[in-house]
Figure 1 (cartoon, rainbow, N blue to C red):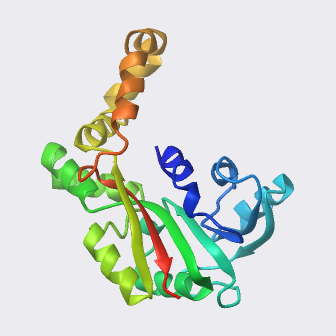
Figure 2: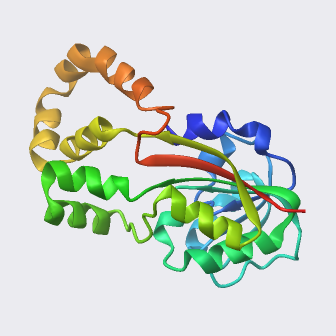
Length: 224
C-alpha cells in the first residue's frame, strides 16, 4: 500500500533526493531508479546496499540528532514507515527542514494514533501495546500534531492521504496470530484459491479513504 501511495505522489519529487531510513534500498528503488543519498542507523545494512548502485552517497547517522549534509542540499526528503520509530520527532523535523532547499518537499508515510485505537477497540489495550512494542512503534501521532510540528519547522502540509482502514488493521492482526499462521501452513494452497480475489479487493479498498484509515501519506513543502 505504501508503495502505491508513494508512486502516486511522485509529482512532489524533485532531485536531489535523500532517502531517510533507506534500509536495503530495494523499496525505494521501486519508486526511483537512482537516488542522490541514503541514510540509515544500521551500518551493516548500508554495507549490503552499496553493491546495488542505487545511491550516489550513503551515510550512517541518527537522523533525529544530525543529518550529515549541508543546509538546503535536497529537493526532496523521502521516508517510508520510518518516523513512527523515532522518539524525538521534533528534532527530526528540524534536521529535515535544514537540509531541504526552499520549496523542497518532505514526503513520508506513517501510522497515526488510530492504529492503536483500532487495535484496542477489537483486541484490547494489552494486545495493542504488545503489537506496537513488537513493531517498534514509538511515535504514533495524530495528523493534527504532524501538521503543527511541520509548521513549527518551517514546512507547510500540502498533501495528506489516508489508507489502511479499521477492517484492514483487524485482519492484519488476525493474519499474524499464531492460530492463523498454523492454519496457513497447513492449508496455504486452498486458502489462496478460495480467497485470493477477496484479498486483492481488500487491498484495493484499503487505499485512498478520505478521512478514514490509520495510515497516512503526508507531503510538506518547506517555505521559501
